Amino acid sequence: MSLPTRYMHNCVRGLASATGTGKKLTIGLVPADGIGREVIPAAQKVMEAALPNRFSFLHLDCGFEHFQKTGVALPAETVQRLRDECAGALFGAVSSPSHKVAGYSSPIVALRKQLDLYANVRPVASPLGATGKPIDMVIIRENTECLYIKSERLLSTPLGKIAFADRQITEYASKRIGRMAYTIASQRLAARRAASGSSAGSLPPKATVTIVHKSNVLSITDGLFRESVRAVQADDPTFADIHVEEQLVDSMVYRMFREPEVFDVAVAPNLYGDIISDGAAALVGSLGVVGSANVGDTFVLGEPVHGSAPDIAGKGIANPIAAVRSAALLLAHIGESTPAHRINAAVDKVLVANDPSILTPDLGGRGTTDKVVRAIIAAL
Image (cartoon, rainbow, N blue to C red; front, side, top):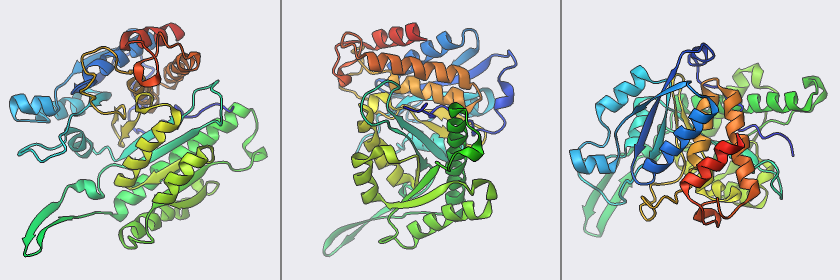
């Protein structure tokens, strides 16, 4: 199996220069709701073990439970301190209700917008040493628009109620997310070439960006998305060796489960990216093992892909691996690629060992959050 390249990303401009200086980096911790309050402290322990005395941590509030207490889901102070004091941050999980609650809006959606974290970068990779077909793909989701602009309205008519939702796709946002996809594909290709010990000229191009859309139905909005992403490559010769293909979103889901090993980097509008990235987690075990990073040009917010899991919150059995993977992504994006590599390798060892006394119940084990953390730290 070739070296997975999920940690080979550094797309946050202006942050890497702060690393390697010996100065402590301030990392914001936003546990939010449910098991977020268990998995984020777990990830903090792993970060401290991987890089002792390298970080100071800033604990910040937000979430539905905070809203229920204060009437505010995302305090302005949280956003301001993340922006002004932190090199990056980790977000836990949010218990947003499925029904409308007056005055409440999802704090993670708001954080992405206020910090301009326009890309959700979600690696999905099988552990090194695992059996079966090797999976090593990255799903890049546009984070700021599509149906997530939350412009909805309800009309009453003689035939009953009619609900409308506006969908926004812009050339600007589509090109920006397209550039992120091509950049990460290029980095992954360079990493594979370096790992092989071969010169770039001796290897055929193996970087592929798959544009996910539904332009056969949504010809204007999805049409603009696919055209804009393609235009980025056409306008930038540095991306010329990247192969570009397209998949309708329903076909993407089908192929992803039938032959996931064929995908490298996939890029999608917000809603499609949300759906396919959660589905892809099933390919490597569960939502509990897949991390992600919300990335902008000057900030990165690591975020495990699972929810707040109120049914197991407080029981000490939440799987911390997604949060730990998210911490590794955070480190990689701010220029600390070596400890990110070590953390991912340690997680791989724990997963491949498949010890039921350590792994949490979502992976068929009977272990605890703390046992998994101690096993990861021992494997560092």
